[in-house]
Length: 159
Image (cartoon, rainbow, N blue to C red; front, side):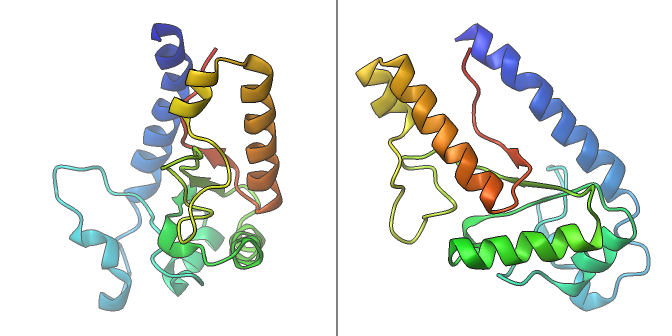
């Protein structure tokens, strides 16, 4: 378990660095309508969140201006086609934009939140204890995320 934690740590640190460097300039020049993410508790580190299926215009403007990354949630996904269109629109504004989502299968799904994941979760995969099956599930899930235009999955990593 410690190996998995250490392997996942660079991803978390990278994401926090992206958040810290990107957010500093997000509030300057934004209209009142663009300040939806400011409602987050002050103790948490704010980052660019897409609130609707199409994404607010301010995120598109910030992406074009060099925003480093966005994190999508289940409320941003209505279908694989819609998600692919959203990520394509975001990447069109900034090809280097990192688009992240937390997709783990099982109970933790953003792609299939309305119906439930078609992939087994970590507990089920651990109970089966079949590395080839786990690799196949991870490969398939990764292919789905790549097809949807997702750059970074915030799921745990096992070694």
